[in-house]
Length: 442
Image (cartoon, rainbow, N blue to C red; front, top):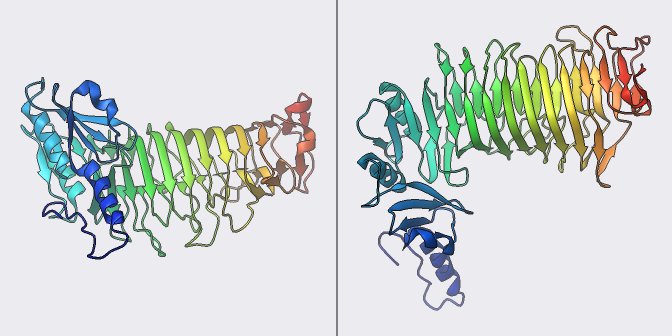
């Protein structure tokens, strides 16, 4: 219909001529910029990718499907520099923008002319002493991996608007592997898509060499990875890393230790706000363990999961963990896991609550022996269990005490002794205590 937008023209004689025209009208809502006074912005629907220019203030907005996000200011009403206008224009035109600390003007990378647009922009800001890479709306293809430098940021317009798609099946998404280590990196406001399909992929976010310090992850969506989505290799120690919200869709880590996988023995003060994981078993045919840890320190405020989520938390060796709320709601599990939460070894663990909505497990908690370092379960605090609805079932009971606990390093359960089954064959130590009767020992 037009040279620039390729709108659809109904075929001659078509009886459903209205359908392509309706699709055209939908596209017009995002292709054509809305112009009105800033105060009237709420009168327009902020469809994903829609553009709004405030004629009185010069503010430029982009819709994210629910609200208008301001990108910058142009025209006479602008109080900023000309650079702000340039950045906004470049982003709206689909360029990846590099804002280097020591560059006098923004630099742009055309994603249609390179297989590595995000990495190219990172190289630019690193050469300028650090800075920020801005992602436009739409899907940016990258062969991968993307390797951040110290003092760099990758920022999108929102997870439903800015998407980076890794095209090399064997490549990781974000790879921390520089010999000098990496400090003060920020990732926020975009989706990191894997190659999906029926074969294995790389890892979405991979700490593979040296230490990562002061990583900040705002809101990311991870989609289409047939592997772990967050892995820390043995001997690598991310520390003081903050992750606000990570949402995982259509990822299959059934053949790995976990969707989130801490293989290293160290790495202090790592915090996660919300992890929402909805894995699939279409590639491996197996449940996915959501959070596996061998060492280091991890605090997770809220872990919620569905799909083929099997074991929610698998703690081994000397990792130190604290989980606020664990919400277990699987819908497609090939088999029933032995427990929702498995705590093995002598590292401390605090689990505040477990809410069970759907799915079947043998136990809620299992306290077991860790063959990796030859230690029994010590210093665990097990919070209340809440079962909701007829679709939730525990085959046996709440706690499986599969190995005795050292009485000098006791573990506690905030419930009744009737909720505990002792399956080990060794003698009683009294190291595990149920608080429902003020500390009955087992």
